[in-house]
Length: 221
Length: 100
Image (tube, rainbow over all chains, first blue to last red; front, side):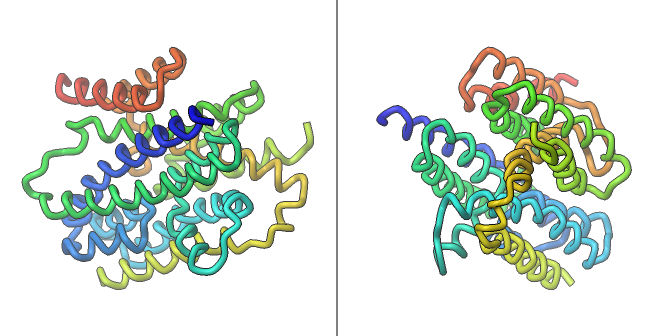
């Protein structure tokens, strides 16, 4: 028992720090797109789902319609509903606590929670709340710093942050790939995402990859 | 327009999250749904690796990020702990970015 929680804390804090630092990039991107520092901070507090936030300010920056920005963000956010369906039976919370759980239901909190499966449901719940809260704090603090220092701060690529995020996702999916079948599902989803990327609006390949899960999960093996 | 985008995006994204948490438990009693639901994070996290590491807007782009991902993959095969995987990817990517 003493080993499991510390491993969970380590997972949660690594993810929180890594993703939190990416908030600098969002703050800078948001200000560059024309949003104020206050608006950028409200994005991270209220929307709090990175890919949707990047999509929204990205569409605005490229001159897209407000409706396109909202639609892109909402489509990217739909995967959080899929995560919620998985997290709700685990967390079993009601009322305000459910609203709080919903707000922090994102890639990272769900990913860390699922990665704790071998350590028991208590570790999964702990991983969810710790990662969700940790990412929330770091993401918001660093959004402010990024927005505030947008002009003086360099490109996030020069810090390697743009590679740290996909590496973090790879590190999150890795422990789940216990059987050949699951490795085939993961590889198929990657190939599928690569193939549909040129044909779908930005962000949609992520949602569309759920079709890979549907295809492989349709029949009993 | 910017305030509308901010407020509508936040409202939609929160509503979507809450819907996920409010779907009745019995929806998950179905065996097929359970099988698919268990595979969804694997599919979406895998697609996210591609979307964040190999895509810029709607184009597949090979750049410094791929070097970082390759090192991350090697680190995972070597059973390196998660923070090492992430930091190794960042350092490699930043080095390639600056050397290029």
